[in-house]
Image (cartoon, rainbow, N blue to C red; front, side):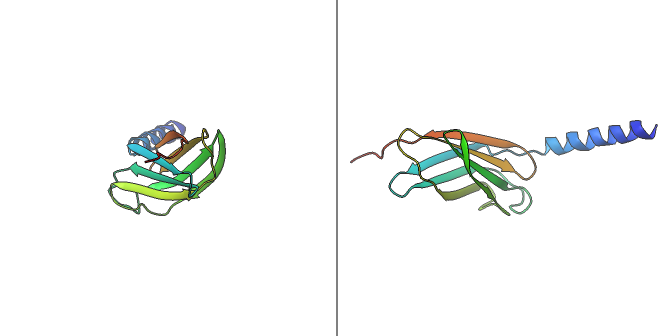
Length: 118
């Protein structure tokens, strides 16, 4: 009987935790070839920037993870952003995955293109 109760409690706790998952809504990526810098912005609504925030960003270049960054709070209640030094060349594919402290994640790809000449 104790095993059944413990199993039911665990299932309930894990299902409630999963329902609080708040993945980022959108991710916008831009890459500056001249500065070798990746700019990441994400819409991530948070009820508290120190409780529900983007806790980790994983940056991949052409399918290989090149950087994993950890955060202790979010920039603003509705938004996360960061600039990441990254050496990439035209045609490379950059993938960014963002993970929330309460669960949930989202990823976005960007193919590096030359800057617009005006």
